[in-house]
Image (cartoon, rainbow, N blue to C red; front, side):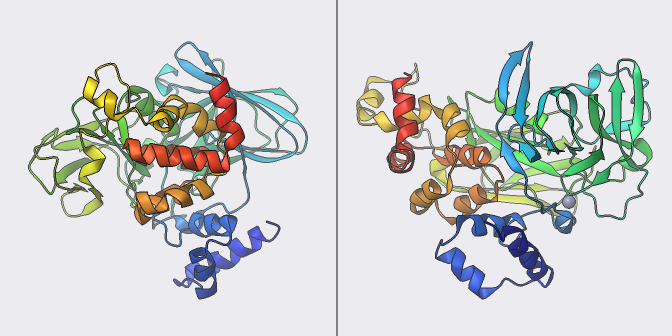
Length: 424
Ligand SMILES: [Zn+2]
């Protein structure tokens, strides 16, 4: 939409005035413009974003690019080619701007692989990335970070670390809410760091991720991690056999090395009771619910306040909503699944659907009545189509829901469905 940027500026102004504009609310209600609605949520109206730094949102347009992926050792290497413009990688959150055609290769690298002297006085504030420009050149690179930057922190606290072979140097960078901008960058290893003196006084954006054990349905893993794409990918890989329950994440930034406590509204066993928010580690609360027939509420608290609160409906962790056709299934279950060809398709092609469904909005609209408003909002609060589709699929815990999605895919993405069916 040509005037999208201006509309966003206008809405940002409205947001600062703490009120929504009735005519725009009406447009959203009537679902007249997907772009407008997405933009509206992106700037935080009706959305749960960190309250402290919401005003620092970078509101320029980043075209989302899906990179090619090649597995190299245990890590994924991404490559992408773009023409002049500004882009964001759907998998890593990396952003770049170029005035000419450019080809890039990049991957996540463990911070632990750096020589300990390099990080003696510094701590990571985002993923470490190994970036190579294979052709062309970049004007800007924007590295993802998880610092809650209120604008008041000292300029010198946060730097980009550049490591080339045995040489390490620090570069100035400009922070937006989620990224740090570097001009005319040079490459090899790049990551955002903070001096330890400031690091322990800073607050960081975090994510909660919930997984339901596929075999023992009343067992949930509740992760509290830094909002780091690499960590999130590690968790997703570790939990790929389990079912994600998608819920909003904390809308307040948290301090590192502090303890956070999980509480439930029902009888449960939680191990550990208190979890330390640790850099580069994906810690989780191992939660056993005693009675799966009632909805439950989960809270994460510090000593004096609740920092996160969600409801989980009983069907979201019900033993009766397993993935179809798993090896351990019974004849009875197989019988009940005989009409679930569509659900089977959705399960089988989950990864391709996340990658290839480009317009998630009309599909989410079809699903809205079944998944409810809260989940629908969460889907729209995700920035990339891949994230939206991932969230949507995460909500589909029953065969019935997956069947409904299949029908919607036939309506909106028939060619993709046929392609995938022929590839079987
Ligand atoms: Zn923040």
